[in-house]
Structure formats: structure tokens, C-alpha cells
Length: 419
Image (cartoon, rainbow, N blue to C red):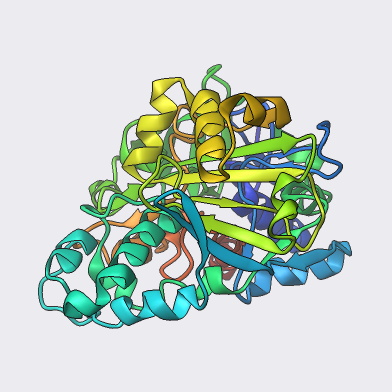
């Protein structure tokens, strides 16, 4: 099969790139390894929740200009994250107040211009701010593990210090009809060019020519390829490049794939409203799940448990996600385990770490890897282009990053001169 461009991956980045190229008059073929499109967006619609449930990407963080533009085009409704935040400690809930401001008191001690990078854990071990910021440091640690899905021993202080780590979370929205409504809109122009269950195995390339071989031995030829696979696929030889690109692999290995456990519990009654009608988040930094949240201001019978980093990976590997969710729900909200189980209508989650086509949640920068995303974003010989959240130096780990880098790669390609 022959086209102008081959795109590997039908997640947000691949679909965005395909749409841009198709609208520019280029022919495209999109190869997707899994049986569905959307990558790490995954919405369940047939539940008892009364609204779609996202078991992958769930929030639109910050301004997110590319996402916001598409939401407007698609006429998709969003709702801001509102409500009060609480902390569970010593068997009781206490209101958190200005949590972002408190965390920022610790974050402000980080340095983006350090001569030698170090891990965020090394930063915390230095006790920045002294005894007076002990709580702020604990909140910051839990936030980095949860929001970034990171191991604090691996994530780079320099990368975190390049902006306000809490900015995106501070201003968040949800898509009422779920993230896959956005994906469905995005795929509209290119649905007929997507081949699901067709994982790419080898990319044979030279200047202005590429040949991609899939798992069935089918060959696809084009003038260029855009690779939009998750970070772990770039780090190993799942896809073989001929000739090999050592610099690409080296840059990819300076990044780390984060892990999360994202568990949605559909309940028979919104029990939390008995005490806190406007409850939004409950922070539990010392527990198996780092935070719980509701859909407030939407009155939905769903409560979500979230864990990130090494504890999330340990939890998903244990095979006891449902059991842990029930025991933690009972503990945090002060009820018997039997009542928690009686309230649960159903439990929904996807094990992204065990998904062979994904192998984690989203990427973050490892120690010494601050320049790695920019290296991955650089085209090679006008033939190989790369997109996906791991290739974004600013908003990695988000759907916004995937969309923006998909558009960037398509435009890089369109600027090249075709023979």
C-alpha cells in the first residue's frame, strides 16, 4: 500500500496529524496496534452512572488551546472542577483550604538553572523551607506522585522547576460527554484510513522514502512517517528502525513512563452529600490511593480513587484493585466495609501499565532529561517525524500535548519539500 504519509498510532496525536495532512491534500494511512482508536483516552458509556465514565484521560488542564479549539468546533460541553477539598488524616476529614498555595510554598525552592540536575526526592530530602514547610512538602510529594504518576526518586527537579507544577491542576475542566466524544470528532475526516489491529514492527527508511512492515508482514510505502506511539515503544525495539537511530533511543530513555491506578466506583447513593454537598477532592497522601474525587458540580453517583507512581504500579500488579478500593472507601469515609460494598453498584478501571500497547499512563522527565522531549520532536532527514505527549517540552502527560505535537509534526512535514 502506498500513500504520501504513514502515521503510526491512532491516539490523539496520530488522529490530529492525520486530520491536518488530509486537509492539506495528502494521502495518509494510519496503523493502530490495538483494536480501538483513542490511545489513552477511553470512555465507558454503558454504566449505571448516568453519564459517560473516563477510565483514561479525564481532565482538560489549564488553557489547553488545541483541546479548547476542538471542543468548540465539536460543540462539546465542559464543566469546571469546583467544590471544596478535604484531607483525611487520623480518621477524620478536615477542609484543606488553599491547597495549591500551600504546595507552592515548597515548589518555589526548586531551581530550573541547577548546574547538576537531581531528583525531586533529593530536593525534598534537603528539607527546603525547614520545619515550617513540613506539611507543604508532604502535599507536594503526594501531588507529584499523583498528578505526574511519578517516582519521586526518578523525576527531574529541573523539569518541574521550569513552570508551576500545580498550574494545570489548579484550573481544570471535564468533558461532560467524555473524552472519546472529542476523539470521535477528531477521527471524522480520517476514519476510512485507519487500520486497527495493525501494529508496526519495522520502519525501513532513507531520505524521502519509508517502508513500514506490520505484524502480518504487510508493507506500506510513503515519503514520510509520523510515529506517535507511547514512550515505552520508543525506548525498546518493539518497532525496529533500519537504519537504527541511537540518538532517538537515548533521548527516549531519559524520560520515564509514569503509572496510575484510576478507579471509578459507581454508587447507589451519593453518600458524601450527607456531610459535604460540595465535596470535590479528598486527599489521602499516606494511603494506597492518594486522592478521591467526585464529579461536583455535576450530581453524579460516581466517586473516583486515584493513585500514582510506584504505589500505583504495586497496586495494579497485586490484582487487588477492587478489594483495595472498597477497603479504602470505607476507611476514608468512616463506614463499615460491608456498607461500602453494599453502596457500590460497579467498579470500572483500565490497567494501563499492563496494556501491552501502552505500558503506563504518561511520561515525565527523568534526572538529566530536560532536553529529551525537544530531541524527540526533531525531524530526521525530512522522513521521520515524531509526535505524542512525550515529545512535548511544555505539557507532557496531557491530551493537549498529544494534540499539539500531532499538529506540530504534520506542519513540520508539510514544510518539507517533496521530490
